[in-house]
Amino acid sequence: MEYIIRGDHFEVTEALKDYTQKKIKKLERFFNTPLDEANVTLSVVKNKHVVEVMIPLSGVMLRAEERSEDMYASIDKVLDKLERQVRKYKTKINRQFRQDRGKGALIKENFDNINSRAAEQAIEEDDELELVRTKRFTLKPMDIEEAILQMNMIGHDFFVFSNAVSNQVNVVYKRQDGKYGLIEPAI
Image (cartoon, rainbow, N blue to C red; front, side, top):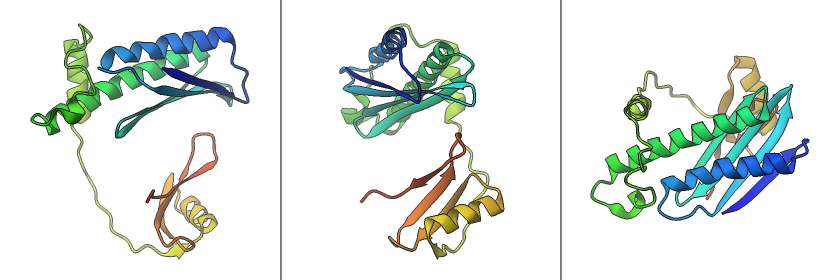
């Protein structure tokens, strides 16, 4: 596996690199084939140690971000979150594709004594998604700056709009670092 570990305004020591690689390598036990790459970004934002991990798989992207007072604790927390995502993904795949082994073969059938009853119960609780509200609204064409202003005016963390330049539906959102992000459809 190729590890791409970088620091965002933060110097990554060899000890941190080794610890991160050792922890992420533990995820390989969940998969039938070795993972290709893991992108890890370590940073410090407002005295919080932030770890973001992205692992591309076939058809899905595992991504987790955690922050705490200690970089090593953040790495441990992000690994726990990624393990939960893998278990949840496996449960979803097993439910949807019991007959089709194409996607299901990506993840091992048994987790070599990893599954405990508590972990299975947590997965089942996570899978109970309940839609409680549906909204419909007309998308007004606007530029990105106007969409950010609209989002801030209504006090939400995201805003869906029709991009006046591309004529596509976009989403602007407020990031945890206080900056803004844009989601565009890939065609």
